[in-house]
Length: 208
Image 1 (cartoon, one colour):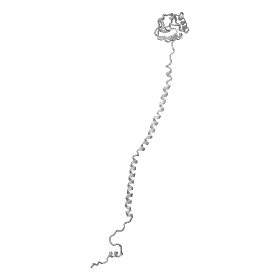
Image 2: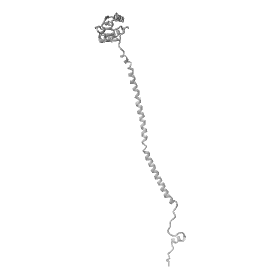
Image 3: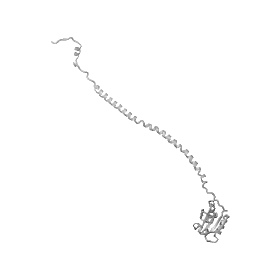
Image 4: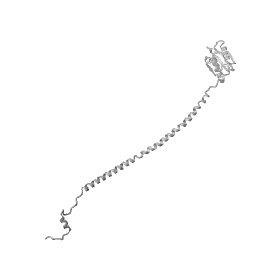
């Protein structure tokens, strides 16, 4: 025979009806969806932060480029300063050019020194009668005052051509003037055959 117990609160619950025994309240639908969704959002956020970090770190390596643009400004100033030094160079170049004018005066040849009273012998070696006398008259008309006409052996005339010979170098201008007057091309400073200061050695007629 079953044992009977006094009535308690559990007997009241049993009288109300419904499931009897241990059970759980059914879970809501969002409790199943929310955890994976939160995990997905968290993973996306982490990936975004990593991408931003890598972007910033790579971008920082390019930051030294603006330094090159700063160095261009001093380079322009440096090039401008040497160009200013070009103007002083023009001033020294102008001064030497002015000195070119005085250099022309030393190039002028001195006036020839003709000694009209020098002893001059006109010597006929051509065998032409009166040749020495005619040449003497030409020189006297030119202003020479000490003229003598005589003969000479043709073998004593250098190279057998008309020659004006003189003894001293101081007589070079006078000998050249005599040669110009008579039309003689050869003037020699090797001395005279007869010992006169200047001798006109005639191997032919200078006028022909």
